[in-house]
Length: 79
Image 1 (cartoon, rainbow, N blue to C red):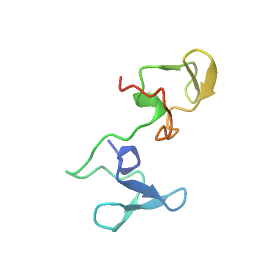
Image 2 (cartoon, rainbow, N blue to C red):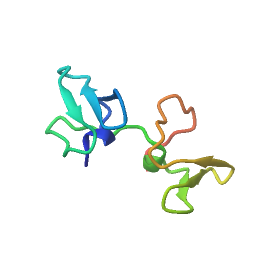
Image 3 (tube, rainbow, N blue to C red):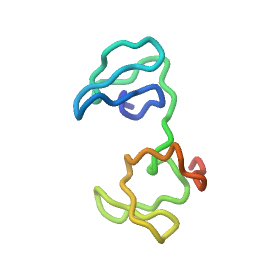
Image 4 (cartoon, one colour):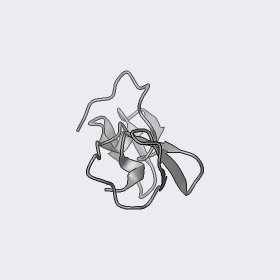
């Protein structure tokens, strides 16, 4: 897993971010640390189905990106 996949990752720009736990600067694509916790993303939801390499559907109704943040989604269910 990468930092980007962690619930503690806060995006600054396309390449870097901050760790919400200790406020350190981190690179999105670096390997995650020992405090890693899976983030709520569409790819981690049981309603998400991948249709191409970079796109999928949610509940077979809505277009969704696999790495789209799902923090505010009321239908999110861990897969």
